[in-house]
Length: 285
Image 1 (cartoon, rainbow, N blue to C red):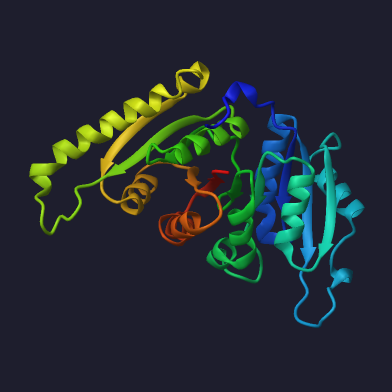
Image 2 (cartoon, one colour; image 1 turned 30 degrees about the horizontal axis):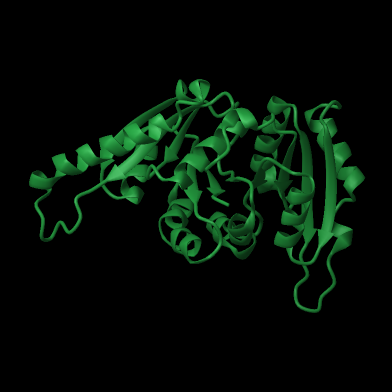
């Protein structure tokens, strides 16, 4: 079972993975906002990725001290920050640093000159999401303050509960909307009108059980409400984001292996590529 929220200490460390491009400032500002709000130390990691036999372009990347000084000049001298400049493949360096510092969250952003979709679903981000034991936040929108209302796409599984709990630790100010998609299967053979009431009743029962699992966390429970909507997860989440002011969607994923690959390759992958808002994915150990 997922550890109780009360067992988690306030996050002490957050990691920002960045290529220092102009487009990466959105992830940078979000990482600084979270670190400052939580009173956590920000660890900045940038990597010179080698291309074949070519040497990494170290001359184009500032040294760690310059990166730290630039961030303090921009965000304030009291910003607790340190920087690491690695070489080679980015994802092992990111995971190594995040694990070494026991970071509560990894923040990623788009890179130049690749497109946003290529960055989110490219090898680096995908491998980080696949292997990271902590939540991974991909940032698309400009930071206008803390996340106040967060959508949690849920199927009421332990994986979804883990994602909610992990998000609650790094987003202590947020209110959470559990968004559950239910649907009548085999609609080519079964009548939606005749079967939807039973499917909704089942979803309501699953919701009650899920909320009961939060009874030991009354503070979190008071920050959670739910909406049950007929449709596929892709349709329901996409439509909700389009019709409401949503800055962040949280999703859960199973551990490494076939189950995770299936989820990442279907619903989560499509939502990562399609949603216009920020997305946090939390992997169940």
